[in-house]
Length: 191
Length: 191
Length: 254
Image (cartoon, rainbow over all chains, first blue to last red; front, side, top):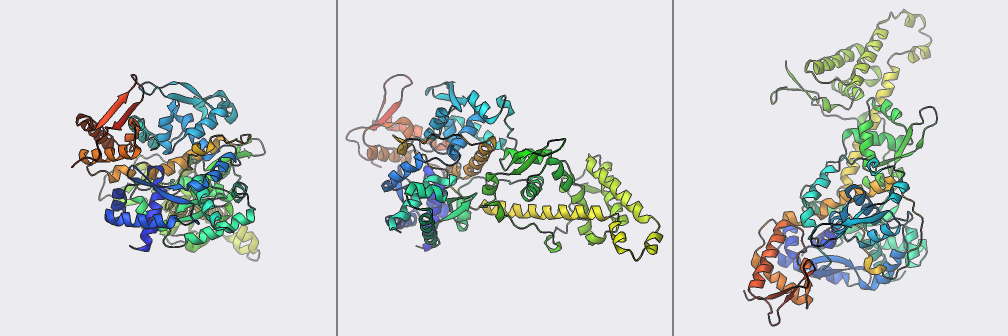
């Protein structure tokens, strides 16, 4: 096993995020056998055991992903309690932008676009009065639909939602998502 | 510096993701001084230099964050279906360059330098969050003044605006394809 | 001779002039205005002949060039008379303003090239979205804080998201293109159910939001039901569906 393979695997797992990677996927991307992939994974996992490391590898449903160690959860709780300088996190801003441009929209759809769970940012935005639920989606789940509030307009100095800058170049990105809407509703919950 | 501090910082950086963390935030959450935080950061950064590691610490727009090393980009690109975005148009890049070096600047001033109307590139840049209006010019028109945003720094991988390459006026840097861009004989296509 | 004219090749008249200067290997500080004007007008005429829209800026520049050209053609006796007065001579060069503009534009055009490089370099580095820390926020007291964000912050966040998404989404599309067999998916599902013990939400069995995977998973579930390897429960219409492995069914015999 080459040393740099370990680095490569770490980078892959990091970039794959919550979706994680299976040994098969790793073997394809790295052009090695699944067995080799498993060996590198084992060796990387061993390294993570050191106290100097804050991450570890977790395996869920055949998919490997990086996560923070349990031992640091108090610290993460403190991180949650100390918001950034702006009062709105990047996660909340992203969520707000998606709602502003795609309203009405369900949480599952937002999570599909963001690729991460979005419970907290939604809660923050509702608490701050920037978004509100505007009804229920059709279909089995009858999920809440979110939209922006009047406070949102006031806060950003807009008269109507149409005054939001048009998203010309990003349009393609959104259309892709449109196609995924159905499958987005079968969004993975946390496993 | 305690060993486990390094693990803790790694966990924090991982959780913060591309929102990043400032030394101030880290010091608050970890209940240490900013200086200590900087030391731990340095030590962690040192560890990441090993070839076995696929991540490194980058400073973007004033915050620290974890990112994959460039050396693994080919591998990571295999994970994406359509490699790379198209990037900004030449018009947008020129406009952005003028704003970056001459901010705050009005549209009229930008158009004077470029010698063409610049409404669309400006709109694109605002939409992409790369520039923002930073006030109004004195005088009759009270035109908007444009400046670069935090996202601008992030987009170009800069920590502060001071990291911009120096504006060069020298001859030797100016290279262009010898091929005539404008006229190409019509072997291939009729007009 | 027929030409194929690519108007988009130039960002404007200054860009076109720089191109001509470069191609003709002209010293930018000593532009032969007559030559360059002819060349420039050729391009403009070609554009017109091809019935392309010539942006007004190009015509304004043509007029400027012609004006400079005619000033340059003025009798030079003044210059001889005032030969001693160099500063007067330099300042009165009708080309000065244009050269200055070209130089300034060129420096930003160069900078734009460097920005492009930075943009590309940045594209080689992948970051991850902030983790959802909901599980840590139970009982967490949020500091009350005034909002200090603008529309631009929101747009910036959105762009960051759109850039980031490129990696996340299609992870599976590419790699799972090769067939996933129903048989292997059935094994996976059983393994998953055993690991989780007890019942599992139906949706948890669809971890990969890609069409082929969803279809295969669904067919696998039907097959597992048929083989009586799993229970499927739903308390009411439209309520959540739960799936559990039947007692006594271990792994699938293959």
